[in-house]
Length: 212
Image 1 (cartoon, rainbow, N blue to C red):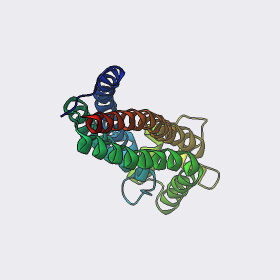
Image 2 (cartoon, rainbow, N blue to C red; image 1 turned 45 degrees about the vertical axis):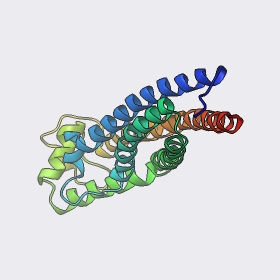
Image 3 (cartoon, helix red, strand yellow; image 1 turned 30 degrees about the vertical axis):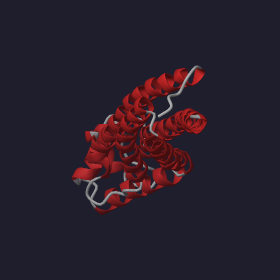
């Protein structure tokens, strides 16, 4: 079996280092996704019939993070063993993750206003049905807000805040959705570098074997 020589060995080791960093980034993406999904404040605000649209982008991040960790392992093995099969699998998986991360990023940015609108409507419906229920109180306590243009002012008797819950909801969930968007787009950019490295190394391995 021919071995990659000269400058291509540099590419091999760069790809190995890249995949180790890639694995660490997968761990980070998975951690961010789990944090967004399990954050007690977010769960409290969206439980009991709340809109689950927000969690779609979060689930994509969690799935992509787990897959990135697995793919990083395959990439390291493929680079060390100079395996065209593993490198080809690595490239294909990167392509899938790239699509998933772009989808998560686009989802976070393009659907931000629609998701926030649904959450505002959920708050108004909960406040209209029973202003003293646990869901409404969660919004008031967690977001330090009270009422909205369409709810009763009596809801604010026990809350000291000049901020309406519509304003607080937009501020709170905008920051969360921007995290989904930026993480998704950022990791997608890293995918491109990985695909280029894997293609170069795979071609170098094939060419070296053809020469022998």
